[in-house]
Length: 70
Image (cartoon, rainbow, N blue to C red; front, side, top):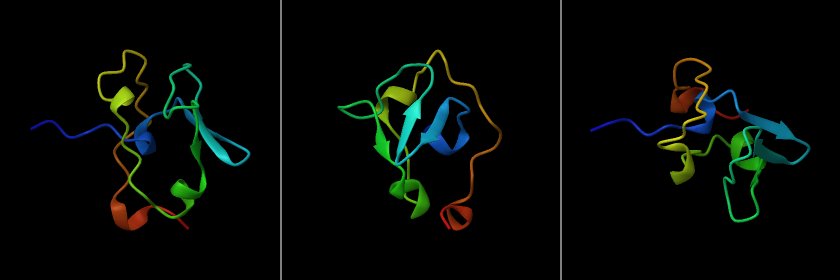
């Protein structure tokens, strides 16, 4: 089974203020953004829209769960 794509590994996912957005214009949630506190707490950031994204720009290897958050 293929490993799901996470926002932790995509260069198109950026933090602007209190939200994470996709600079390629994809809507990560109903309103297009995800609260950055999910990133801070180290939550899994896997979204359906990212799984077969033609604009995926891998920023490197997936971040191990124990290294997420701060």
